[in-house]
Structures are given as C-alpha cells and as structure tokens.
Length: 269
Image (cartoon, rainbow, N blue to C red; front, side, top):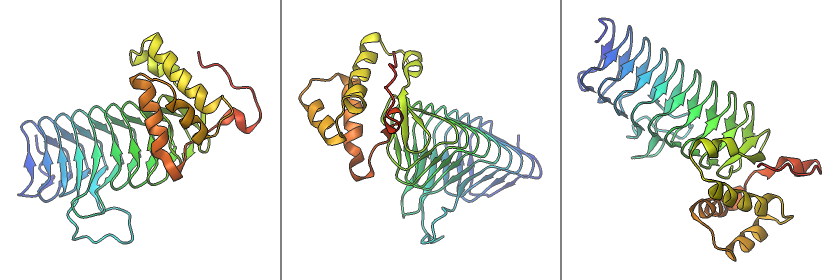
C-alpha cells in the first residue's frame, strides 16, 4: 500500500490499510489513521494527527508552516483532522501559529481543489468548501456550512451552523446561523432548504425566521434587537441564533442586502 517512491519518516505512525501514492511525503511523527489514502505528491507535515478513512488529493500540503511573519519554526503546533474527510488536489491546511495550538478539521468534510485553511482555524463537521475557498487564520466555521467557490474569509471571522455562502463572496464579519451569506459582508436571507434537509421541523424553522426577522426586518439595530430578543423565550435554535449574534461584539455581523438598496425584504418561507 506504500509506493516505492514515497518518503515516510521512520517516526511516522500509519494505521492499518493506509495508502501513500507516488512521491507522497510523510514527515516526522505524523499520525495517519486506518484506511486513509495519501495521493501522489501530497505532503503530510510532522505535526499532523489524522483520523481514519481520510483522502488527501495530489499535491495537497497538510500541516505546513503558517503564513505568519512572526512565526518561529521551532514552535510545536498541530493540524488535527477527524474521520472520513475528502481533501482534494492542491489544498493547503496550515498548522497553528502559537505554541501548543492547532488548526482543526472535523469529520465528513469535503474540501474541493485549491481550498485553503489558515492557521488556527476551526472547521466543524459536514462542512463543504468549494474550489479555491480561502479561510484566514483563526476563522471558525460551524457544522454543515457550505461555502461557494472563490469565497474569502478574513482572520477571526465566524460562520454559524447551516450557513450557505454564495461563491465569489468576501467576509470580515460574522454570518449568523441558518442564513445565506452573499456579496461583501452581506446576508441575503435564510437557508430554508438547508434547514429542511437537516430535518428541522416547521416549528423550528418558524422560530429561526422569527429571530431572523427581529434582527433584520424589524428596523432595529443589533443592540436593540438583542434587547428585544432578551424579553422573549426562545427554543434551542433561537438561543443559538442570538448567542451567536451577541458573540460578534466589535467584529460585527453581516448586514441585510435588500436593506442596502431600500428594497422590500423577501419572505424566506
């Protein structure tokens, strides 16, 4: 299962059934779980800990040094990857920039060709990054997010659960859960189809819509909307929505695109 041209450090730990293709490189004490496939010319850095059943495409570099001018190569940091991820060709995932820190990718994610995950980013499970998506350092992407091709995310940006982002968009602010991110720091509406596919009941969807409308359609600023939300009782999804909005603080949340042009807000349902 190991091609004769592969270069594998003697300290590396490879689980049963691991395949390393032609000219694949496994550095240092990297750990790769069972039945994972490392394709031709891929490089797995010394500080990578990878679960089982992962696929790393040709030319990808996992665990490379962060693109941080203050980084010292002697720093001990990691990339931690869960199970059943598909990392296609020429993707890059950089290790943490601070001592003992890590860049994290969860389970069942799909990184299409050319995607980049910057140092210390935290990517949840079931996430899809289409071609050439760029995540800056310390970005946080929650579970079941879909990001369209060519989208870029500034460092420390957060994306809530079940968000879908339009391709060729750019974000430096937080994108609330269950919404549709688009253009530059914009929200176009709710990801109703995504919620249905995730098994949300009609009642759960209504609660999310109520929270979304209070934030974006009630004519309130964020502080006023948070205060109004605090006077109501919310279920789990509503609390998740408002806790995320409150966490944005000075970073701020994306604004509502129709409001930029004085247009009436479409009904998401």
